[in-house]
Image (cartoon, helix red, strand yellow):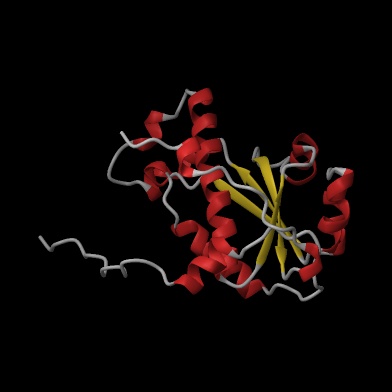
Length: 205
């Protein structure tokens, strides 16, 4: 039997330029340049998101990249007043949702165990797992977008039930977060707000 392939060793750490792009100098964007985001970039973005780990490789996240005038008009019906303009002007708004029936794909995505049986007939357990793991995928989406040179603006200010009705009525998917994507106007980013320190939130045990 052949040995399993071994991943090449990763560098000890990313350099400062990469850490700046992903974390230190990155900001949430609230105003946008009109530069479009290509299909190829959105496909590359998803391909990176899909590589992020999820429990038992569940991959419950589902994504709609809204950018047409018709799609934006429909989405804006469900967006809160404070988020309307930045959503309207963003080149793309990603609706991130989860599929409560994600486990139907587990025979393909986690073939070495009968993982589907862990969730069948257990809707509350499946829903909680779908929500938690799709939330991980939201974070992967933000970091993957930044790594591709895009700015992001994640938002919870929208009517999720309305979005589900407008975009997911035929799927059963459930929306959780909107993420605007594109290239920010420098004037449309906020200064870094205070973060809690290590000693306030962490313990060594």
